[in-house]
Amino acid sequence: GLVKQGALPGTDPTRIAALGGSYSAWLLELLMLRDPGLDAVVLLGPPTNMFDFRRRFEREGFVPPFGLDQALVALGLPSREPLRYLKHSMVYQVRAGLPPTILFHSYQDDIVPFQQSGLLAESLRHQGVAAELHLFDGASHYLLEDGEASMNIYRKTLNFLRRHGMPPFPGKEK
Image (cartoon, rainbow, N blue to C red):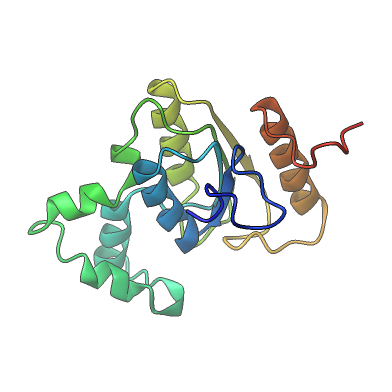
């Protein structure tokens, strides 16, 4: 809202990219489906299939951190509220016209399986949406890593934005 209106100093309302990781990636996925104003999206370890989360919660004893299991409980049971789970599972909501998306995920993610990013990238591409998937070793779910992986994510993100007409530092490009 405020960015699109040009009300935030230092922003360009004609170039809007959004970044989300983990739970905020899930919220960003929902925003992508509702707000056609995003020009690019960066997702880090995104949950994309709430049916899988609930299955892991029920059958494997998986408990999301920070009390986020309450979000699963609030969705109700998939057998009683399947449409609610569909609505909150980005992998089933993909359609043409969504913004270019780059996804990063660690093979060692113990909260959101890396396969969820793979399924979303595949679904996006199938609908003609520009999507890149980058899987890597190390850094676990929160991608907390001070070494080469974090710099690699940074460089790949900047290159992705440039390729999609959004140079991150206008006027400072070499």
